[in-house]
Image (cartoon, rainbow, N blue to C red; front, side):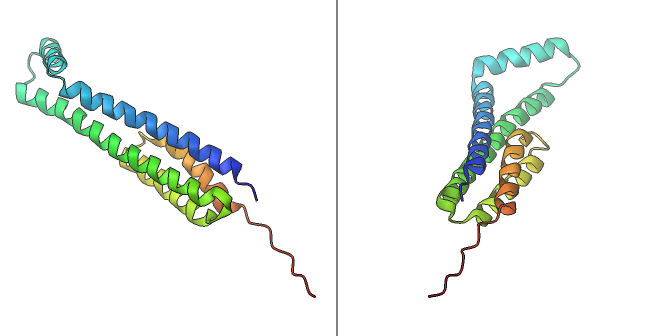
Length: 143
């Protein structure tokens, strides 16, 4: 049985996870760049002068931590997607691939409070397809 649909959806989902991982890397780079950090701090200080310096640095630090969190979840999502593709190739372990895809979609979406739902939808659909499609039964031949 061909599992082309599941593989295509998994590849698309992995690409979406990779895109969000790249966005997380840009966030980390952005907030590690001293010139950009100072410019953002000055801009926020001008817009909200009542905001304390410590509060502002804490808020900017949250964005940097969020970038690392996004990178880690995205890398895990891509790795598990590749593992699922390996399981789907040749129809080796479609049930295991389906469970991995569904769990990855649910955990990543919930952990980011819906941020990774775009990749999660592709993984969820592919996972459901893996579990719903049955392999055809081999006819019993008697000799």
